[in-house]
Amino acid sequence: MNSTDFPDFIPVLTIDGPSGSGKGTISRLVAQRLSWHYLDSGALYRAVGVAAGWADIDLADPAALVRCTFDTNIDFIEDDVSRELRIIVNGLDATDELRTETSGAAASAIAAIPEVRAALKDRQRAFRRAPGLVADGRDMGTVIFPDAPHKVFLTASADERAERRYKQLKDKGVSVTLDGLLREILARDARDAQRVVAPLRPADDAVRIDTTGLGIDEVVERVLALLPAR
Image (cartoon, rainbow, N blue to C red):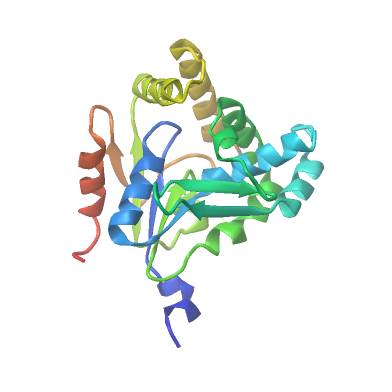
């Protein structure tokens, strides 16, 4: 027998937080430093949203979205050179489309549907494989991996999160406004915090890190410092 026979024994580091808190970037870098697997849980919801859009499914139709969730094939492939994570939805590379604000808004709406969250729960837990997992999302430490021995909740001011997102999208050639992004972030914060199922909140045993004004490397080191000596 080995650790894969007892997945509960495989260590998990959960990194939760609101949009723009830096959890995606930090989680990927920490996973690389630890040589652990990485779960971008938000990409799963965005992938379902993209698949629903491709199929012209109304986001106000929960039953159709649940069927879409079960029917959507989602694969994660790491580029051998750039080490960038590519998301394949129903056989098509949807990585760039998943990063749009439209995709984020659809994901937030879909994530509020309890049946969709339930349908994706096992998919997320299947990422728990040896030697360990870094799981990035909004309910990783509270719902998906409540037994995780290491939990972090990242946050930052809404203004800084909007500025980060603005720079990221402008660098990709996407036309956006800072004011528009700030409104979208505040609206998404409200939706995520007020939803009935798995609202966005820190786990009781999570370590909170405010990333406002901090560089990426400093946040990565703070997170790694929370783990036992390797």
